[in-house]
Length: 494
Image 1 (spheres, rainbow, N blue to C red):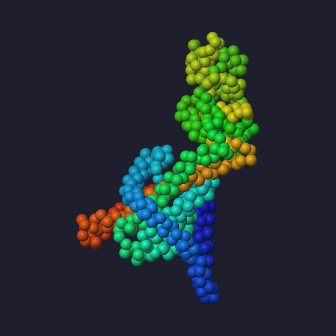
Image 2 (tube, rainbow, N blue to C red; image 1 turned 60 degrees about the vertical axis):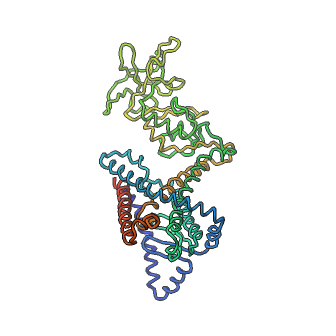
Image 3 (cartoon, helix red, strand yellow; image 1 turned 45 degrees about the vertical axis):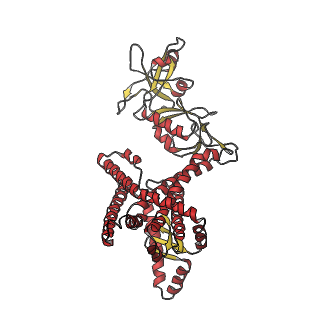
């Protein structure tokens, strides 16, 4: 469910704004001056919607629209082709997403949600509060680039440009351009397509540019940061199991998880995924050491069927299981650090046979999904973590970039990486959603112009072409509405 404080703040804020707007407009002494002030600054207010429009950037838009006409013609012609392909592709993608959502609802498979290519994002629900700055900044930039595409293409096609503006709808920011409608209606359908497809085309280009920056980031930051030596800890949550005197600290460089080498953040995530999916590894301990460290204990079974043989209050000892030639189910309570330090990782006793020294592969006897993980972060002593591997992944933030100098920020590469990822995701999503043949979106105008350009010789009557377009728009709107409604239900109600 959406957190109640978030709902209260959003509703309360908009109620206060709308109430103030209503009171000022109904006041006989303030109405005229207030409306003049709104008109002067290009402001307009309605329930859950506020927008600002200006002509300050008109000269800049006209400068862009008249720059290298032949190049812009080719640029927006390629964008027109992309926009038409995106219109059909968005319908296929939304159909696939809807089927995935319905399958997840029927099978009750929560993990399937991460496999969907499109997901509804609700701040404070499935978007962490710490990521809101990235989220809203990426949405605003994607919206501005989208509208710049429309504006420049319109000027290129000799359509009058009236102004540019920014709006806020509920909590989501966006942008828009004001074009002279009569001019739009007078130009050819192909010219219209260049204008209407320019927005999704620019969103696609922004996503590709962000991906290139993300891909080339190690090379871009090479003079200041080096990579491939480990994963640098940038933050450890207060409630993280890795937080403690023998845990991880900001600035630590993680080089290994068990016997899995870690050269970057991707390796960290991959190693934790493998550890989570595979069974717990064991450690080679000689028979003499095992006899020396173990002591008699009472063995009992937990509710999940696993065996415990140590005192529950012990913070240093762990129950280990092993086998010998006579018995395949032996247990010993051993001091974890003494057993694990300088020990070879193993799966069976055969992995431990070396130099004819009798040795056993002892495996921690832990609850299901719980793992004992040795985390190497030299020069510090190894951290021994007991718990679910994903808890470690979610509560420790890392970076693949290690500063070459102490005065360089360890957070800068993470900020750039995260922002690029948000730009790729949100600019791509904006391109997909706007390309859908749906009422009030770019897809509506792309579809209408496309039908006029392709079906005018097949369907002579304009009313019949409009009917075909209306039916397609109705189906596209229903498809988008179903995805949004079910996506919201999956995120907030389950």
